[in-house]
Length: 102
Image 1: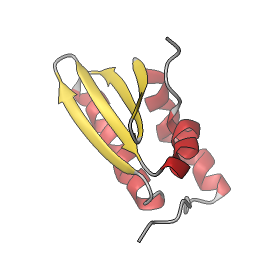
Image 2: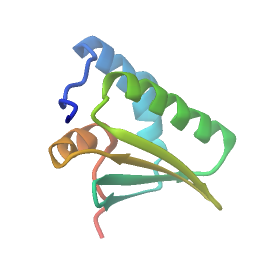
Image 3: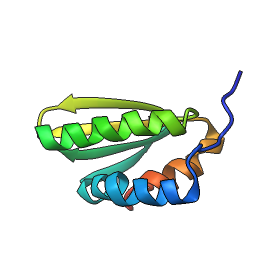
Image 4: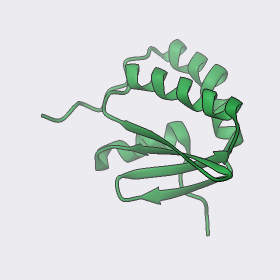
């Protein structure tokens, strides 16, 4: 059974989330690229960035159950994979950003 593409946050809750968590994460992105089912976002490595990403994932899993998240630590980079159904791509792009222009 597919999970419906519905964010459970109200408009004011979403605005607060963007201001307190999402904008800081988006501003720290180093690179963004498209994957088979979503997007991969790369960030500078470090404990503070890792903690911000973990917090974001915990919060987003509560309100956007139609998305899947995975944090991968590699040398000098932290990757956040955000995936979902083809219908969810527009939501991922809106919340997290779209692929870098090559």
